[in-house]
Image (cartoon, rainbow over all chains, first blue to last red; front, side, top):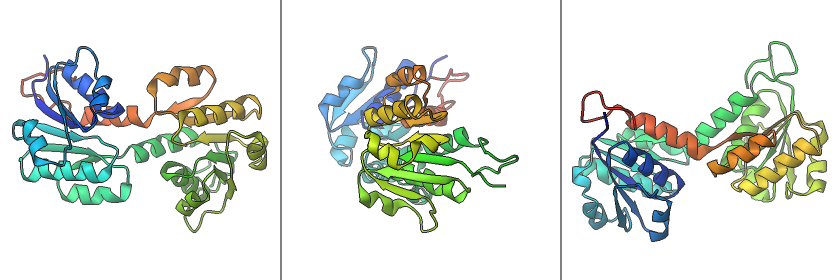
Length: 146
Length: 146
C-alpha cells in the first residue's frame, strides 16, 4: 500500500525538504540535491533517502543522484533559472518521464509547458487564495468577483 | 456589479501588486504600502489606487494609509514578522474586520489564527499541489497516497 518510486528533488529548503520527508514517509526512494549542506538539517529524522551536496545544473551532480533511474524529478529551488535548467536536463537528457518545477514568475509558465515540464507557481496559488478569501465581501448587493 | 471596499495591501512585490491590480480593477479602493518606491512599478497602468511609501510597522504610515477606514488589510511582504506586526496592529488598534497575512513558516499559522488573522502559506499550498500532482503514480497497484 506504499509508493515505490525513485524521486529526485532539487533544493532542500522549506518546500523541497517537506516534499522529501512526505514522499520518503510514503515509501518512495528519494534523493535530495542541494548546494548548501546545512539545508539537509530540514530533513526529518525518519527520512530514509539520500542527500547529494552539489549544483543541480551540473551533469556530474545529476549523475551522482542517478537521475537516469528517476521516475520523477521535482525542482524546488528559489531560482527559476536553476529549476528550468535542471528540469530540462532531466526531461531531455535523462529521459525522466514526469518533471515538475516551482516557478515564481508566472510569465515563464508557458515556456515550461512547451518543454513538457509541469509547473506550480506559489505566487499565483497564493494570489488565487487571497482573492477567493476576500471575494463576496462586497458592500453592494450582488457584487461581482474582482 | 463591482466591489466598493477600502483595502490596504502591505507589500507591493509580485503578490501584493497582483492583488492590488486585480482588486482595483474590480472596483475596490486600494492603498498599497511598500518601503521600496521601485516596487510600485509592478502596478499596472490602470491601477487607480494610492501608493504609500513607508514602513508598515510604523503607526504614522498606517495612519497615512487611513487604515481606520479599511474593510480589509492584506499583508503580503516576504517577512513573516512584518506581516504579523502589521496584521496585529490592523486588527487590534485600527479595528479592521478582515485581516489576512501571507505566512511562510507554517508553524506560525496557529499563532496568527489565535490572533484572529487569516493566513495563507504559499509553501504549504505549493507542497499540496506537488504531492497531488505526483500522487497516484505508484509502481504498485492500489498504492496509497504518500
